[in-house]
Length: 178
Image (cartoon, rainbow, N blue to C red; front, side):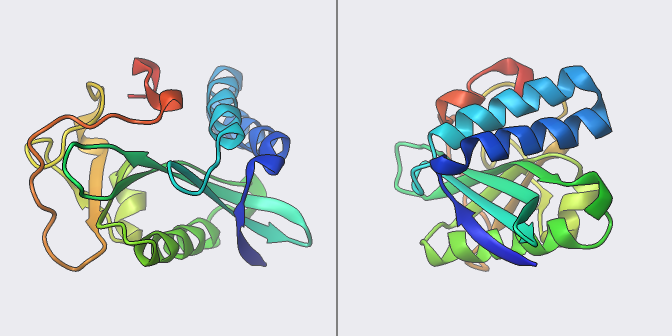
């Protein structure tokens, strides 16, 4: 098993992977929605605004994650971790956690200060994410489940309050994801 950075040449593979994983776990409608999101994100991977990491076993993609830049007027470098997927047959084996930790280390080495995610607190707490108030960092759009807004400081310092709503990459600028 190995982790690697992916690029836009992997678009079809990444989109098919997310579609398959989310269809298996959440149903066809959600699979198509997240598959389309992954397709749009992967077609725009530039390793600055959009970064993607994958885990491979015998050259088969078994896990994938995206980090997308949240833009503020101030110079804080903040990324959002989403979406995340591990193939159904490999779930529960620590692959997702290992891939997320690999990605977090790479993002930290790229000078990011903070990573945000929007998901299941019981899962993301295993890789260092903690509940984050929108009084500290706002979501780009209104959250339907504020309990899922989570953050992690990569510097070890507390997350500093940012008094503005960030902008997100175009693919996420749709209330359906929030």
